[in-house]
Length: 119
Ligand code: 5GP
Ligand code: ZN
Picture 1 (tube, rainbow, N blue to C red):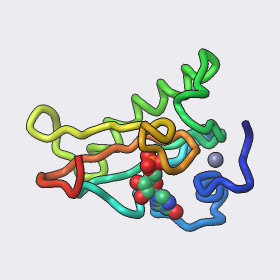
Picture 2: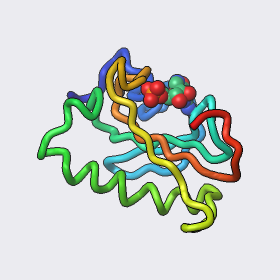
Picture 3: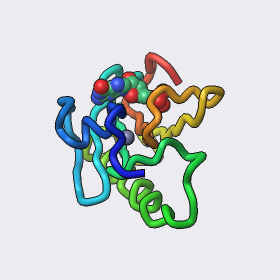
């Protein structure tokens, strides 16, 4: 499950498709969603091509832990107000019935003043 030549998020990680980057390290990449539902809406993805949460195993525990600990830090940096008045929503759509459109694991982080377009 290394980079998939047909995957738009692998192309974003590789810089072949432009994105508004929020964060990058050796394992993870974060960028603003192209069609935001909320005033703050960015995606955190592993650089590794994992199609969805359905393929996740014990070997990915460290990576998922990194994503989940990065989310609150980036949420504040991107303008979400602090908990409990502010906060944010984390969503990971999985599979067709889970509403997943891009098949490279990603965590949506959404926040900011309501109302939002969706959610
Ligand atoms: P999903 O429905 O798979 O959970 O969400 C995919 C998300 O990726 C959508 O919110 C969509 O707006 C976003 N997206 C799709 N293509 C691109 C793109 O080329 N660039 C960026 N920045 N976001 C994208
Ligand atoms: Zn990919």
